[in-house]
Image: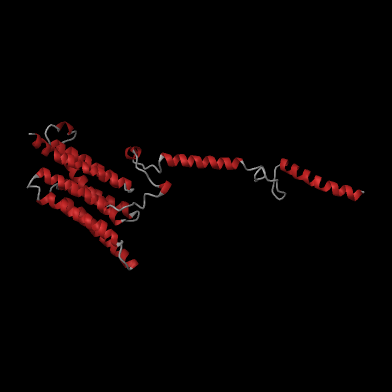
Length: 288
């Protein structure tokens, strides 16, 4: 009985593999993709939990709604991962991403179990990426992107993605619990491999965007960490200290006031007093 319950809970537990995927995406600067992966993990886990024994209390939505968002979030994860791999410039990146979000929602609402739910987003994304890369190759007259991208990202990622789709559509009849769990694992690994190593729109150094709980709740990205904000405060304090050390004539108080500068009356008085002292002995000797 215990092994049967564990087997029924295996698809729910295996859905949690998308959580490390979201963490890796956030670390690389792909915050939108990280939120999509977290969205996939949440609805996939809740959907499979409703099928498991004794976990029906977690079904806070209707079963068909959970089923829809489970399939939709998976297809959406595939779409945003491939678009991130394409490395599009703005506003093409935002436009293409939104196009996939809307069309995938309509397609899956029409049919949730056909081959087109995944082949449509994948085929469209591959076509768009191919056109973009061929244009770049024509402009540069060289291989684009680098060969390491094909050998370390595209090749392994596509292999794990193909394995996941084969498990999903052709081998689930063998043993649903184990096969579907391996499908989750293969899909998560393919996302990590296909996702670029760094998001060039996320910034670098102090300007690097950080994903926090506030960003997840309020849909905004904080520009830096608390430590960086403290460093900025220290820099401002140093600037104020330097300004306070500047004398009335725009120079350091250790330096004498310049004659050519437009100085306040106190500075002019000091200059005239020095001139009078310097001319004093000379004028006295001339009178003698």
